[in-house]
Image 1 (cartoon, rainbow, N blue to C red):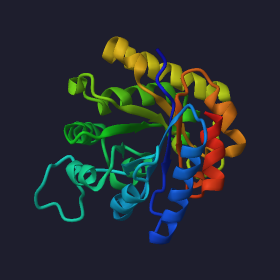
Image 2 (image 1 turned 90 degrees about the horizontal axis):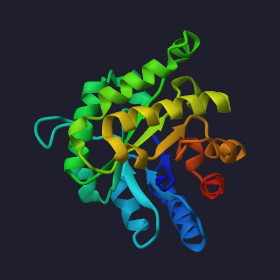
Image 3 (image 1 turned 120 degrees about the horizontal axis):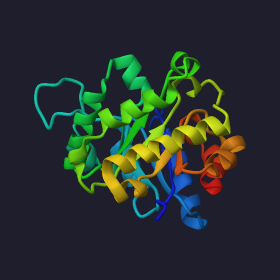
Image 4 (image 1 turned 90 degrees about the vertical axis):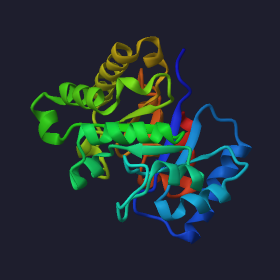
Length: 248
């Protein structure tokens, strides 16, 4: 059985209290429409609690953008998975390329965060993706396969999680791989999930992320094994985000 598509908006380091009006507009539009996808918004940590309150009773989940692998302790500036869950988060993005590149996150660290998230009752969205240099060297499939194997512990059992393929070179650049290139990576990821988790691997949504917008969402979401989208800038405004949700 194919998993229900997931459209998740990653607000990154954007959003103040006034921007909750956009979250409210998205929640109201999803409630009023008939959509096939689950919808989530992942704001900065400072807005998780307020966004959860804003969206209470509406069919949009709230997620975090990262969490510590530690449950508690002397880790100044870090946010634990339990803190996110208490604030109202139901999901959390882990291993985003901006964390891997800018903060030196390894597959092993991402795997530890995945376990922490699941222990707190959060659904991880685990990100993988190749750089432009790796793509040009013909290494895209091997890179994402290695990241997938190293970032998702086999010990998670039947816990719910999603995978997001985000080619690093397509994030925020306006560039996207060809439809055939996206399909090849998603098929490889599905194969890796089934190899690791058996039949349960068929039920894991595999999202595409990387300059997804209203103009290209429908054709990307129609690709085999693309089970949703991880959306950046286009998730900040209801007018930009709703057409992507509708395309799923």
